[in-house]
Amino acid sequence: MSRNLVRCLFLLLFMSAKSFAQVSTYPGTWQMEYLSHSGKTLIKMELQIASAENHLLYPALLKLYCDSFNAAYELLLVKKNSRELGISKNKYPLLETPFSMGSSDLFLNGIFDNSKDLKGQSTLTLSRIQSKHRLVYLSDTLLPAKAQQATAMRLEKFLKEAEITLTKVNDQPWKSDDINGIISPSLSPAYFGLLDTIFLPTRDGILYITGTKKTDIVTIALNGQINSDRIAISKKAVTEDILLDTGLNLLVLFAENFGDEIPNKGKLNLEFANKKFNLDFGRKRDSAATFIIAPLYCEKDKGRGSYFSDYYPTGDAIKPLKENEKLLGSIVATAKQLVLAIWDDAVEDGDSISININGKWIEKGFPVKKKPQFITVTLQPGPNAITFVGDNLGSIPPNTSVLEIIDGKKRRSFMLATVPGEDNLINIFYDLKPE
Image (tube, rainbow, N blue to C red; front, side, top):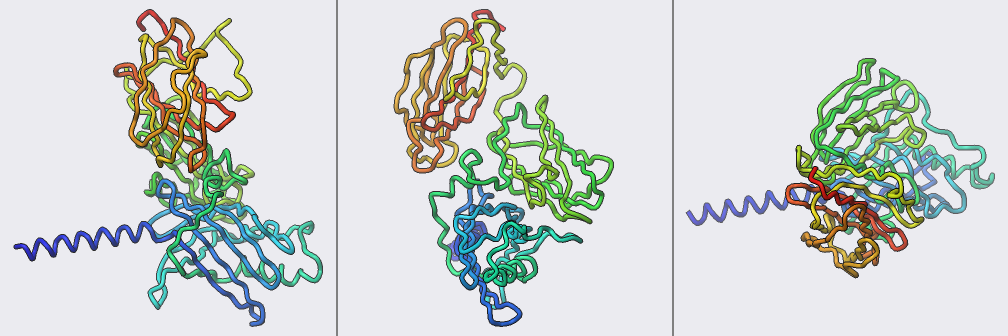
């Protein structure tokens, strides 16, 4: 009996270790070397992948070497399924010398497919998005000097046509101060396909897919799971229901092809109560992109009688925002005292904030912890202004936390993203009369 128990425990540990290994497959360094058809020119490529953010987003650094050419580019990879990573359209150049490749990095688009070679080593193989036409051309204004044009053309041909397979050489995640910039749209040096967070009033919504080209195909993934697989665009919109988790969700629209011409013109339209928005490959910045990512934040307890009414100030109550203020929302409260719950829903990294209500400080240097902490505030009749000031950036910028305002069963959640010099503001109107 004891032997069977030991065997069961060993099996469980083995399965857990295997699952963890699968989850942790991508972070590390991947490399390849490629000889041109002449057999004389060696091209080297290295991809360093950081640890995952929200289990889906992988900031990465791509290095490229050929003759005297030396370059390093930041990019974003996003998990599509258990073995595929989508590649961001943009690759932000940290270094390009002695010339620039211009838009040729767009040839390195599509997905990396994870598998093992004959020696059992992990590999990432590029699978480009297919089209009947060329994706981009080297701009005349970006052509290098005559002595370097041969190298530029070899690199372009390599990125466009070569079989690109990188082999993993170590498991050390890429670490850099730039990582948070890649996954934070407000701090990012370039657009990597990641939108700003969209706040939604309800968990349940409707999505429908439209487009102008029948040959286009798209896939929709929600929180790492395929929601709609390889949907062909048609004249009649494809409509489906969608249910989000409370808190942060990551919705990704993937382009499966470029059809008969560039780009994929698929559009994902979404409706959550009175909130409407869309993800559109027809927009210039997402043209010829592999994916668009929408972070969706859904508040809790949105049933009847469990939410605060919105506050719309009029007359003298309307006060212009200061240059350093960002208004998160305005609500109506019927209780003199409210509870503020504040916590860090990501990593506890030393963030601290200060809180001011109606010009008076109620907290200074308040540490934001992983576990919610509660502060009771007293309102004055009529308009109240609560200001949240970021004291620092913590070890992982920006200073972010979740705020939940509580009055019995009523709750309203906000995402605080405070940086020194930019304050978050919430207006609360205390109505003495019951709603």
